[in-house]
Length: 117
Length: 107
Image (cartoon, rainbow over all chains, first blue to last red; front, side, top):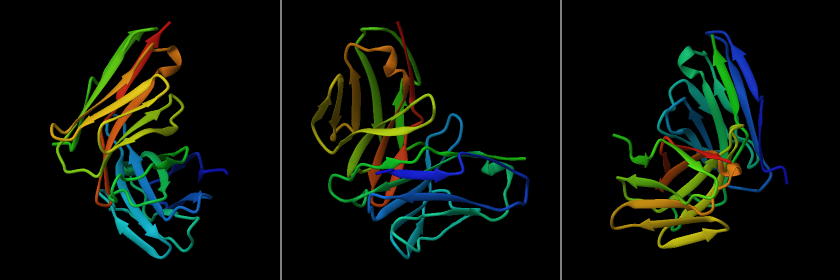
């Protein structure tokens, strides 16, 4: 199993450009998550999905969109890139809902380092 | 105020030392997680706890639900343990992370 894969690894965007960060998992997990990690800050949840066709906002969703057409894929879209979106983005997946009794282990992708100039 | 606070922020130890990293949280949780972020950036889940204590090799994680506190211990530390250790809590569908403890183990 490849686990959770993310592409690209690195990207530089100009202000106002758009792009899609790709995330895929081959573990048949229902739950998928997008986080951003800024220097000196903890990871912040952007969006999550509890299954194909179902997505919801996390703590910092502004400026982003997601879709979940299949169990495997959970792309993150930036429509109008801004310097404040310079960050490292991590995708993760888990078998069960985090809030379920005992929670569940999350599996993380390798991350995408995005710079907006 | 952050939902999850970790201490210390930075820690340097000599190889072989016993290490403790602390985590306090302020929300009701369903589980607490300890993660390891390697120097290259990859994140790996080490433990998931809802009560008591778990051990994996030289790593031990404990949680006190009443005090809303968890500790991660590393026995006989080794340079390959050098990484950022992140405490996170899950509540509902949300997941809150501490800012991490950067550990450097010197040979």
